Image 1 (cartoon, rainbow, N blue to C red):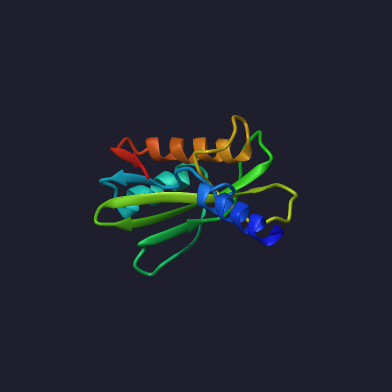
Image 2: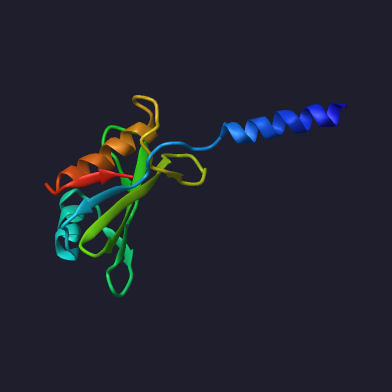
Length: 132
């Protein structure tokens, strides 16, 4: 009987989505080419860590965010004249795995600050945007 109750509680927990990371993680920017993307990343203080030979995927080095306790890394993929921006953040001095940047963090949290940073970067291109 205890196993049955446990299984019911566990299935309810999983079905409800509790524990899943909610939120949007990607910003789509229309009408940007590779040169404009790289220039925008460099102007925002990021350096390029790696990219594919075709330059269709660009990943920046981790960047210390001023007046905060975290580092952020931006990932961009380019396809058909659209850029898909996403990223990860790591809290300084912690050995945890990187967390995805998303729009669901509490005000002032590293998640929230990194989302605001990603959103500001996307807006700096002055092109139509869509949050996915």
